[in-house]
Image (tube, rainbow, N blue to C red; front, side, top):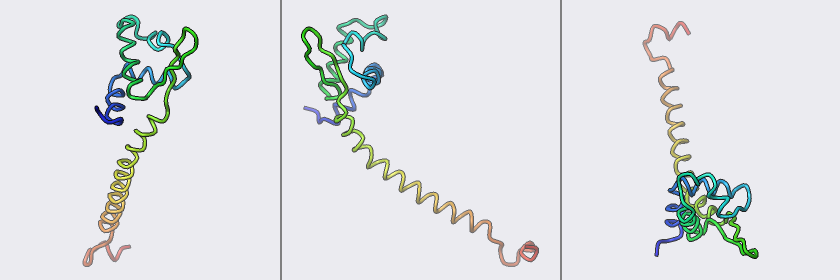
Length: 123
């Protein structure tokens, strides 16, 4: 069984499922509502499969209300992805900060007049 993070990234890899999540970020919706933008190129069973992938990954929750099963976003699953990505954001931010400091040092050294430079006395 794949780990939760792998299932989440696998579910997020598909643009149709990302569009469904974007729709759910505005509030709960039925499977029909989620599939509406894709009806011309996708059958209802295909739309349902996408919803099941999102549900298995824990990205959405289906409620039970009489005959309806509205879907809603599960922010906890996205929090796990954000936490995982945060460590890499920190790494790259620190790397860019070190690069920035190095470039400032190099630029400052390049702008210093050199001994014996005829322009040194003009400054």
